[in-house]
Length: 267
View (cartoon, helix red, strand yellow):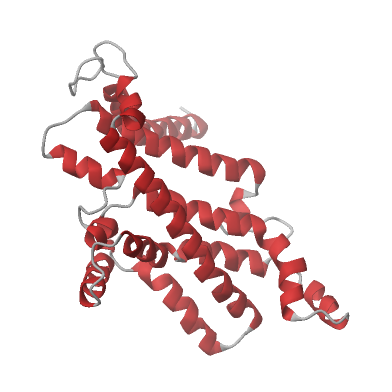
């Protein structure tokens, strides 16, 4: 057996290992009856319909989408000036700000969540929906910070110097040169933060408890009353949203470059 064949077999086994749980969950989500049976008995998409028609699940979906959109927007608004500052101010002490930007994502999620819980309880804002958006923005700010830093580093500084020579101030340079060049990186950073915020549970639970149900919190609450294939349908929904978002980034942007890979011209 050749080395190429062995690699293909290994790749196939790894792929099946990774995709296997999703296949089982997807199969359970189309069961005609309310059961955990796999292979599915019968076929029905009614459990997917419940995500949009059942008031409880629909409310959780809207809350998750609003929270993810708000958190991703705030994360980008925090990361953009920080990445701009780090790019314009080359100094050893500037790395401290970069470390602060990535620290929330490096710490274990439960530690970060407990920190947010303590802070919001201390200031008397625990349970407010906006606290979850701010907490998610801080927690996921690393993602747009990394992508925007890659975007800034890809800019030819001679363009900025030429604009400054022609009399353009920092705002003009940022608006007319920098922002158009880093736009793909900004959008990808927003997308990464959006998808992860949509799926995040522990930080949201620690900041708002059960006062605002997102889809992950709704799944946890529903488990106390039994299992329905709707939960599996929600899991598949999460995977589809992530695949669509990242697929669009890969289709309309240079995904390897957005993730930090160097092209042959950059090496």
